[in-house]
Image (cartoon, rainbow over all chains, first blue to last red; front, side, top):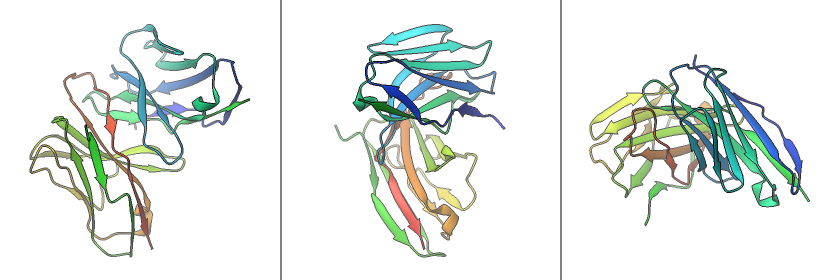
Length: 110
Length: 115
């Protein structure tokens, strides 16, 4: 069974601090990785895509990929109350279909 | 730009009834997907389609049927609803241009309750 694992949280982060979210995946054939943000009662929205080893930055978000360790992470800098949400990690399988983790709940406290 | 639209947003049905959830996208994306989301399980793939008239099962397809006669529509039917199918259902689409995996764009979801 191919799996994507995330800590469920909640991850409590003071406002202005860095939130660090981790994700591991089991399918070594995965080549594409995505982070989605999901507010309560809403649909997932894409915030980051990463395809190569290393870091990718977009505004306050940085995604990190290490294929050798089968590990993906997301850093949220200068966390804001609006960042409070569940963050879903997804990895493509060998056919390009996405496998999702169960999500990490982030709570940013003022 | 309507994007991807699901209907209904909320549905209550009884055990044993047939229910169809609708999904319509205006992007002309080749790929469409149905996921269900349950607490503790995240998003699980029910069915997907690479193009009109091409569909395939996901990891939790039992009890569900799909069709895709037109590129823009991808309805999901629960043949005989069971309480275990109470869930939030998300339709998604992608260009599928990358064989490595393309990002999905999600509809607003349908919250289905089976009593």
